[in-house]
Image (cartoon, rainbow, N blue to C red; front, side, top):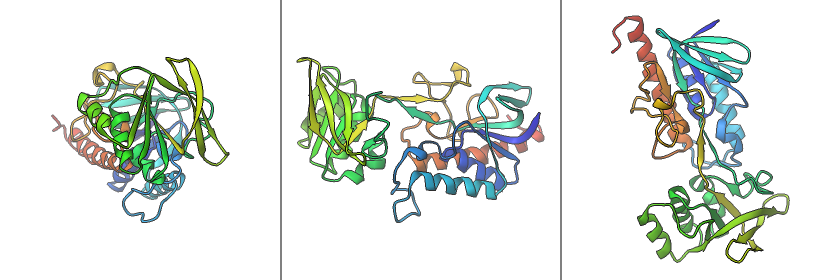
Amino acid sequence: MIEQDILIIGSGVAGMSAAQYAARAGRSVTLLEELAPGGQTMYIDMIENYPGYDQPISGYEIGMKFQAQAEQFGAKLVYASVTSLKKEGDVFIAETSGETYQAKAVILATGAKHRHLGVEGEEEYSGKGVSYCGTCDGPFFKGKKILVIGGGDTALTDAIYLSKLSEHVTIIHRKDRFRAQDNLIEQVKRNKNIELLMQHTAVKIVGDGNKVTSVVLKDLVENKEYSREFDAAFIFVGMLPQTGLLDKDLLDESGYVITNEKMETKLAGLYAAGDVRTTVFRQLITAASDGAVAAHCSSEYIDALEGREYR
């Protein structure tokens, strides 16, 4: 049994931020990560909207910087998959593929994964024209031909944002009507920079080895496939919050963790930070903020717990 003050599950930006704040406050901290540090940043080619970096920086590089900073303050990064998490009395027990950990507080920072289309070329050109975040990558495609795939709030909101960067934005949706809010639908319909192709799907994403050059579309009404030139394909077909370790009563109807402004869940000592929690905006900067708040508040919780004053 390895005992720690704070156990952080997930080493993306939220997890790394929480680790450095908690370790700097003198807490013993372990981050458990099943794949690689950096989380979603590892799939971002270039980041240009993170404060403090006046030149674009690769997602891999900024992820490594977060790791180095957290470890500098004493946080430990361990590569292991957490198979179960439970609370026994005042402590949490986390079982992994290798060791068992005991902690006074846990910060869940497992993030949310973008649903993928699963079409040919999607993985090959991820970060090279295929994107899942308009505000992250849109500025790289100013004036370019942009395809937006999806029919929900996120798809339409990002399409409106992208239409401010380019006059050539096309939205395709597999159904004959959008599932987004009515006001967003009306904004899109009035936008002269946005073309709508209903009852269409993407069949294949094509490129020249370095970047996206076109997308093969399918007209579901005509049952016909055809190719169109695009410089980017933004895919918004849903998110999958990574909350398999938690009971459903801690989640909202979409599967995200419900927290208050202190990142507290309704289970005392359990916190959530970053994309895994219910929030109105998901960016690197908001994940970093969540992590800092979770670290600060979980440390205060431990202080109160040890003094038996926590309510």
